[in-house]
Image (cartoon, rainbow, N blue to C red; front, side, top):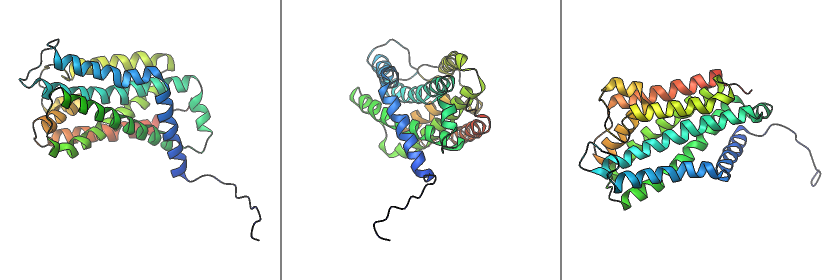
Amino acid sequence: MTGTFTPAPGRAPMRAVLSRQIRTELLLTARRGEAVVLAMGVPLLVLLGATLTRATNVPAADRPGYVVPGVLALTVLSTAFTGQAITTGYERGYGVLKRLGASPLTRPGLLAAKTTAVWCLVAVQLLVLAVVGVAVGWRPQLGQVLPAVGVTALATAAYCGLALLLASLLRPETVTAAATLIYVLMLAAGGIMFAAPDLGPAGYFLLPVAAHAAALRATLTGGAPVDGWIWASLALWAAGALVAAARWFRWE
């Protein structure tokens, strides 16, 4: 009968559930002042400090061409790994994940929503940093943007998977310390902002951040195609980390 209210209770489509969770993740990040400072303020200071001053030695005559891709890789690592691990650890400690586990959002759905939200955040960060980089003298090869986006998407997925896995396996109280320690070690050994021993293809598989930074320099600054070993490394890290996170992720 026309005009008659007919209740139709049921679960919302998964696409609607995921889009709502992605929106929530982005809003929560935007409302945390310390997260915004870490996401944008610190990378900008590093970029400007390393490009405009001689505070660090870089193994290249083109200082912006070496520094800016390194800062882009550093930003992805900071946001997708360290920030995500700490945030998820707190969410588990405060019981937020336990409550989400009782919602229509499935475990793969939560992982997909968190990874997609980080992709969105990283896209905004890298766009702002690239504009600032151009303003201080960086001249990227615009024809190589697509390969750069591809390797960045893989690196982001890999770091997200590792962060969610770390936040699931460790006690919430120790996630922050472990994520920070791993971040510092990868920063020191990865050759992001300064010269590091060249480990060749083996280094790309051991340190995805080194593979990511090398790929961005090769494409955006050098105009060269991405090495096949780098594609293989980042794809392997992304697939392995996300599968492991989906397998061992805990709601509480």
